[in-house]
Length: 298
Image 1 (cartoon, rainbow, N blue to C red):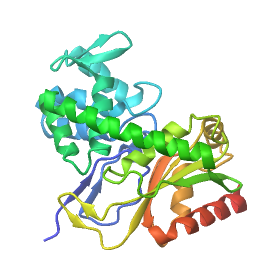
Image 2: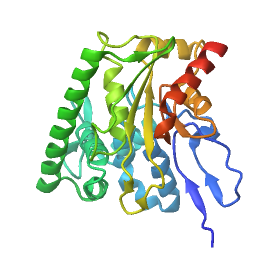
Image 3: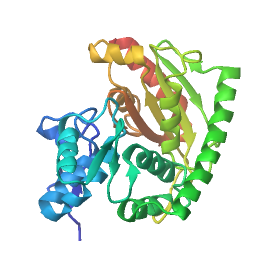
């Protein structure tokens, strides 16, 4: 039979019309996923309603919220204050330490980012869950170092290519295709690279959307093989463009990708960071449609 589906997320939501789907995204309740809460915070608050004893897991919400720029605010700040009060975390210099593990939150977050992204095809997510519940150990730290060295080497190689060849450009967009450079790593690495790229002011235009493509591997660990050749595209917005989006003069990244991929892609994300999965042969069409949408409306 069909199972109940509960969505605990912080990306811009879409209406759920199926009675078996409960979308508990807190954006439906007036909070902003860009600033007020993370997917981890949404999941933590839900778990605490199921069982108040789960308040000892509040550090997980704080780790997840570390991806949001500008520190803890909104519901994330509420969880931080609760965690401090209950002795789950303690302040240490400019960050906080998980008392149970003796590890700083920002360090934990960085290591999980590497395990989940670069280690996606090598058991990284399972090691990440183990770390979240039981803390770090030598095996996990060794794996993180190995994966990070590999990711850094690929990032350096791609950056050198872009400095040598430049990004392709339209009036509103600057883009590149990493192809199979990140082969063996999960698709989140392309978004992480695009975020890094958005601060490379000698290489990028500050008022243009950054879109980066990478090829997806056909195998999804634990789920099987994809039926077609797909690419992942990640979009990021440099600082000057963020201001234009804040002022309502330009659309958010997710709106651009949703409009550009209608009919062939699945887009998701926020105003400043978004992604889309699409057939490989639709990459240039995505750019063309995104540029047409921007040129005709803004």
